[in-house]
Image (cartoon, rainbow, N blue to C red; front, side, top):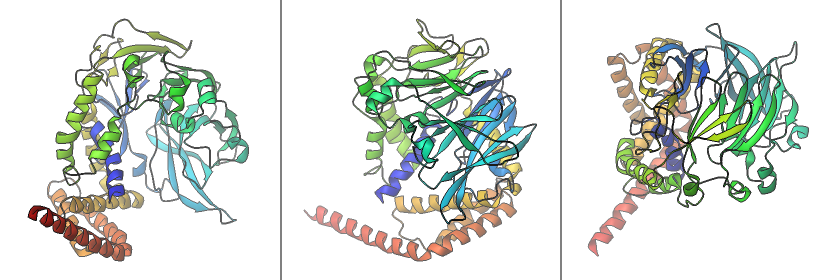
Length: 491
């Protein structure tokens, strides 16, 4: 069960980053769209949603989750890894579909490219990736071209794989619906050639920061950056924010705690970056998430609720790590010139002190200042309200995913609390009661409740035998723990 608990703790990291212990404003860089600012975040139900806000954080438009579009995709989707970016008055995303078969019985995954324009989602086409553990992100460019960033060097054609670069140019050719790789783009980082770390993963995990004419890919773990021209769909410059970092440090995968705290585009087209001091992060040996994930799997935290884990483990640990590195250093990157400037003073509204993390995350303002005021709760609340209004329009794939999440939550709660009852009737009864409360509180409709319970039935029935085996194993484990405790008390 440690593996399962570790998986949950990875998901929980997202929860923690969106919680109120620190004034987080968003979970990824924003983007200026005219005079409005685009933010992307997760809702309380872990759906990635987008909104356009003004300088007072007033919401002017919420982009509906593409998952709410009925029959938008031909195949059931298993995951949702879109990272939305605006370009030329349209918001572009990708979405991963389920496994499919070619005529020769070989498998592939369908990645659908879509854009939101004129208040409607439009399908642009798809890319067939060979079956494998791989993901991709896209940067929209002129003339229906996309710079595609792959997580691993697999799943593409042999010629592209041989280039050993995570960056490739794709386009949709006339009268076709399938994207193909036109050419590969060299990554341009000499340090990567020398050290050869897992630079595919390093590039994929980097943030995409969009400005009017450029897209900058910024690695928060290393400070490496890549500046792409959106007009020419090409790499203009690759470099590093930090000066003391060596190829050896990059080769080891970066630093244990991300040196870059936050990076966002300024309205005039430059990038503002807040980071820890180089003297600290180049010598730090402790790893926050490694220590956290180790502790969360042992007593007393293993059986605690998420709220108690946050209060008793995450908050004090986070405070300790911030206090070890209490200062903020500010930088400005100009995509036009590729120059990096280390600022002598923080911008108006910013600070050189992290203040237990309260100043780590911020949004840029139109006048060049920054704001650390939290905006996430306002946005997610409004998104959730709109989702409820459209709840009857959930697609079958979305309902199945929601039911799957409900089941996992109940199973995990029983595991934490030592309740060795995983029968289908018992699980269904608890879920039925939970959803009835949601209905009575006007959170969901009776129709949605019935649809979810039908999906719960469909998901539980095929695994009834496995649930019974797990229940017996868990009962034996509890009995052994009680026996060991009794023996210990006797001594």
